[in-house]
Image (cartoon, rainbow, N blue to C red; front, top):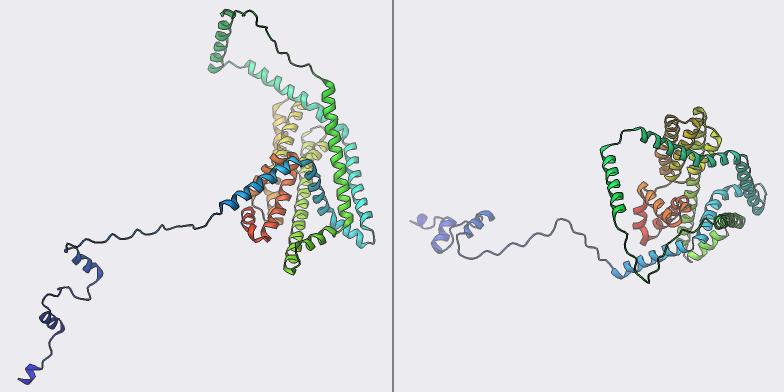
Length: 421
């Protein structure tokens, strides 16, 4: 009896005996079973909260700061366009100074004063350019004079070929519509002229040769004046040495870190500009030599002049190759009189510029700078719109300097990242 009274009772049975109203579901039931059991009750379920979006970008935008930045950018663009006559010679002088400064330093190591070395280099460059232009002046004048004649010959040839062809249906319909319109205009009664109304006839002004000569002379004098300003600015900058560099370092601030960053930025800008100019000169020489040899093999007149033209215009991105290809094809048609030879000459120029411009130049430029090709193309378009031909020449070096500055300024790192490759 004692053993029967003290026998243990199972927990579930004991719980049911003590609490008959307890739920029949076990306490360790999984959540899915508990939810299934809750559905049998009449109590309403609370709606589950919606999950947040998978991707969110929480970046507060300061509208006032953004507006001020845009206004400053637009104001800077307006000033650059308005004072282009001042900024263009300064930018060209900076490029020449960066390119010639190592040579002047070498001459200084040979115990030649900086001012004398700078004068010697600039006089040599100006004299070499003048001698080359004088030697090629006759051939260049022949090429320039032959371009209008070649264009007229091409136009006459195209008209002759189009006249021999059978008119198409569209041309026939257009001709019929033109004849109907002329007949309607002839049969229409002229409008009656009201009394008291004076008839006015507008006549174009006669050709004023003096005005054209005056504008051309002023343009030539302006170009000569800008060239003189560039030469003197470059001479003073080369003769002064690193005076402006030390001044910029001093202006940067008293802390040693700021001075180091300023020196590093100046060295990087100077190095990138020198490497870029070296690449441009090398590729221009290759294009000029290859173009001259190809045109000489095809029998085109004045191949040396065309080689010089191709080398110089290669400095103008995207536009120079189109000018050389079109002009040389016109002159070839004038000389040979067939479209086949014109196509051969134009194709030779196009192949040379394509190989050098799309293979060699991007490879060398990517090794000398870290700018994205898209940023380079957009920069060329923007600066070409702003400064014309000079903008096409100066756009890439200027953006290289901008990227070097943005990479070292914390608030402008996003712009540097956008310009980088």
